Amino acid sequence: MTHFPQFATTLALAIGLASCGNAASVDTQPVSSPTVTDPAAFDGDFAIEEIGSYAEPWAVAVIPGTEIVVVTEKAGGLKGYDAANGKALFFTGAPQIDYGGQGGMGDVAFQPSEAGAPLSGRAIYLSWAEAGEDNTRGAVVGRGTLSCEDHQTCAIEGLKVIWRQDKVTGRGHYSHRIAFSPDGQHIFVASGDRQKMEPAQDTTNNLGSIVRLALDGTPASDNPLADRDGASVDIWSWGHRNILGLAFDAQGRLWDMEHGPRGGDELNLVRRGANYGWPRVSDGMHYDGTPIPNHDTSDAYARPAITWTPVIAPGSMIFYRGALFPGMQGDALIAGLSSNAIIRVEIDGASAREVARYPMGTRIRGVTEGPDGALWVIEDGEGGRLLRLTPG
Image (cartoon, rainbow, N blue to C red; front, side, top):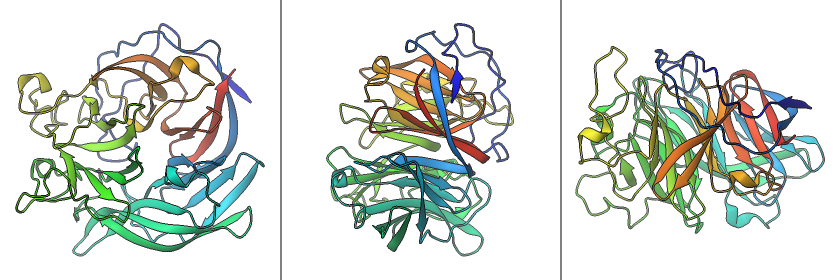
C-alpha cells in the first residue's frame, strides 16, 4: 500500500501539454502561466492500493450494486476486478474496434436501475471507434447483455450498435463518453468535434455535441431540435470540442469537462438546446498562435463555469457522493492527464472553482467511486495501473 501526501499549498506544476487524451496525439503544444489552486482537501493522506496494470486503460466503471470494477483497454480489451473476493473478471465478446490516434475502445456503462439484478442478464453499454468507407471513422455506442456462468468470466452477448457519430477522416476527438440520466430513461453521449472545428456549429451533423437517446439508442422524441428541418435530432447541446468528462450532479444537472485547444479547458453546466461556442469562442488559442475570441466577448453562447490555462487535460469526472471523504461530498473530481493529478472542483449554483489538486505523479485517465466511497483510479498509457484510494 502506497501513501501519497495530501495537497500542498505550493504546487510545482509541470508545463501543461495542450488538451489531449494521449501524449502522442495531435494536441501537444505547450502552454504557460501558473494555475492558482487553494489548499483545501481532506484530513490525512491517500492510502493507495495497487490492484493491477492494464494495456492503455481508457475508462473505469463500477457495476451498480456490486464491487466489480470494469476497465476498458484502448486497443480493445475489457477486464474486471471483483473487490469482494479479490479476483480478476474476464469479458469475452468485445467488439472489433478501429485502433489508432485517439481512437479505440472507449467508455463502459451500466444501468443504475439494474443495481439489484443478477449479473447475468444485465445490459452493458460500450463505446468505441468504428471504421467507415473512404478512410473515415466515427464513434459508436453498442448495447449488449452480460452472461456470467461463473465468477471469473462474463460473455457480452447480442452486442448491437445503437448510435453512430457522423463519420469523417482523422483519428482524434471522438469523445464517446456515456452518462445515464438520473431517472434512468435516457443515455447522454459525448460526440467530439473530431478536430474538424466548424461542424460543431452545424446542427445538421452530430459532431461537437452532446446527444440524448432513449435506452435503445433512438433519439429522444422531445430533444430540442426534434422539429427543426434538416437538424440532427439526437442533439441535446452543441458547440463542444472534445468532451472526456460527462456526469450528473446530486441535483440531477448534467456537466461536461472538455479539452480546450492551446489553453481553455472548460467545465460546463450542460443545458437543453444550448450552444457552447466552439470554435467561435474559447479561452484558449489555436495551436499556431492565432487568437480566438474569449467567451466573455459574446453573449451568443453559453459560458463555462470555469476554464483552465494552463490546461489540466481532463479525463473522466464524477461527482463524489460517498462518506469516506466527507469534505468532498458534492464536489466534482476530475482525472488530470497533463496535470498528473486529481482535480477537485466545488460547485456553487451554476458557478465552480477549483479547491484542491492531488498530485499523483503520473497521467490520470479516469476516476470513479466504489460502493464504499473509495475512489477507483486508472493511470494513462501502457501498463497504467488500477488504484484504490482511501483515507490514509
